[in-house]
Length: 205
Image (cartoon, rainbow, N blue to C red; front, side, top):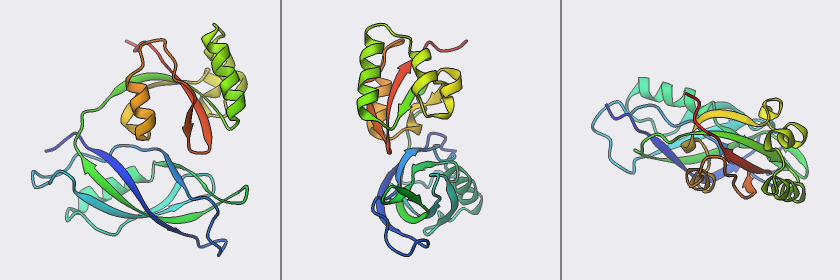
């Protein structure tokens, strides 16, 4: 059984059910859980799946459908369960988040997991994040600033995410994370509609 599965997404299109007009901005993937192990040795590197996803106004996936089934019913069911855990920045009509149907092609390839222990500081204001980054570089506490300014769910834990697979992040974020040394921080990175600073932590025994 192939056990190292990663996905890379190619945006194909978007239509909305409510409101009827096309949104001004489309959903953008900000967090993905790798697909489950491939069931057979019949996989060909570069295989592509096609999905139809209903992304809600909070960026979660309400429903997911495979337009091109793999031919393995059990794997398809597990894959859709994983896809429903993905997170997007929501579509927007003006400044208002709206639900949206999107059609995406998913290219499947095999890569090993990349576990990394992280903390995050996430804000919608780029100027604020730039200022916070400068403060951290000068010695300010990442933990304290995350508790005050971050808008992420990790805020109450000082931005602590714990050990996470770097493959869960978009490619531009993943590349920066895997290059980090312990206790280093990234420069401000665009993640959906927000800007984030990540800090690499020592792995918890």
